[in-house]
Image (tube, rainbow, N blue to C red):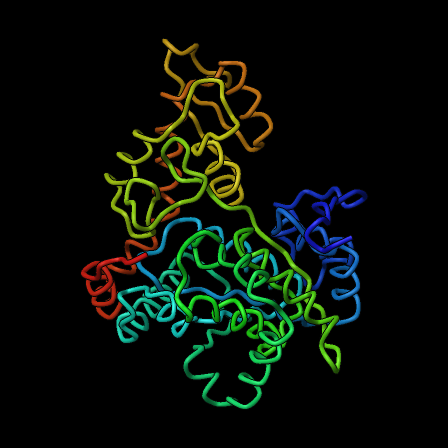
Length: 383
């Protein structure tokens, strides 16, 4: 059976309160608790048995994520990534961010201007610091710098991966660049998946912690690990959930569509306006971006959501306000009609604004951060 046919991991026997685990001291966590906390990061794990073995045998495994500095940062990349990093570092993991500046240039982001790309990279790091990412076990490594330190090792890896795969297999990975297999790709974009696959081994990553949209190249890395001579460490894949865009039918947020996403330094008024316009049909949970924001961002971050419910929509369940600390309870009320979109949306906007306020404060009060944001806002985002 191919790796791509592997079903999402289950957490049978690991039914823990993840919020409670994330508040415990790292030294207090048992192996089962560390596995459960790590699994909570991923929508899919390939393979759960490998993850358990890794956490049992290696006290400080390395997790990797690569990001293209390609424009303003939206809330999924900012808050959701900070949540995931903080969970994994609590499990003893060291997190390596691959600042993929050369990759952004290959993919024609920021018009291929490397200086602009690197400025965007610095802006993104500032956001993660401001929002509360645990930086003690986090490293930021720039592709353009690190590859030039060990070019023989890197390019030998890239060539070996390219040699062991046909064009069709590589083009199937084009999703990682935000492209489709049917798009007309430049030669650079065909080379891109081979380089991203090589990154995993170059960084000596034990865990690939990226979104589901990066799954295909991570599976390619596991396949290569078996074929390589000498054999290489086969990485565990922890693929996190992809947040939808705010408008109807948008399966993924888009930086090029400002109405599709909430950006990390959006004003309070902008957040309220975007949530007010967001797709949120009464009683419908599936495909509802407002519910997805609450499930994957708000409740994991704030622990609860307080909803003031108007009399015309049935009043409040719990006195003057309804406080939800369980997504299942909120989901049940929303599906039944007991919770109305006109009450849910203001509560969601208020919660998001509270999460983003430290970021706004940082970019307002820190002169270097303010200059970075001004520069990034002046750049034209290119696909």
